[in-house]
Image 1 (cartoon, helix red, strand yellow):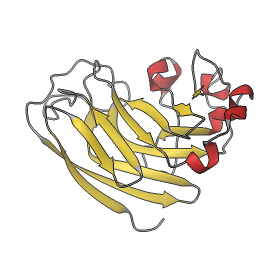
Image 2 (cartoon, helix red, strand yellow):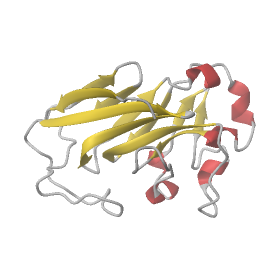
Image 3 (cartoon, rainbow, N blue to C red):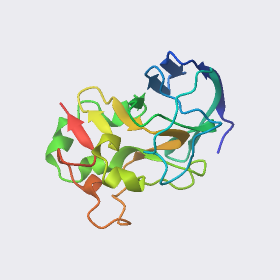
Image 4 (tube, rainbow, N blue to C red):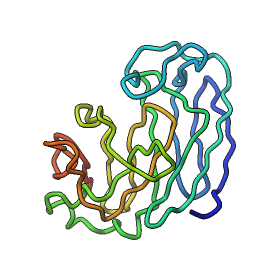
Length: 188
């Protein structure tokens, strides 16, 4: 793991778009950040109601390449108001995905390219258990441009997955086949 790129930014109650170099973009609607002093955090808490903070929150993002993946890790760990749709997007895999409309016709092919949750600095990557029952968390890919995006419900770590097989950890994992009902969705 090389030295990370470090980005410092603020999220005001009015939201906005945060660009982390040429790596990732975060789109945050107004009143999206749960008040860190009173909200819960962690697996099983992502969908709990919370009060949005009235304060500007300072965030540190570190980005680095780790073998064949790119990792972004945010601190402090923050949760977003469940009704807010916060997205992370990237063109990092555009050189592999752009123009590959053939992938849309190959079952399972897009399950190899995703933006996955990684709680431990990119060492492991997995589908949040809620992603298996919450289709709003699936990765979307524009196969013409290679643009990837997904909804996130919290700030912690995320990692690009490239060319890796679908995880057998969850029986019936919808990300192991291309469909409109779950998992990775290709757009042409």
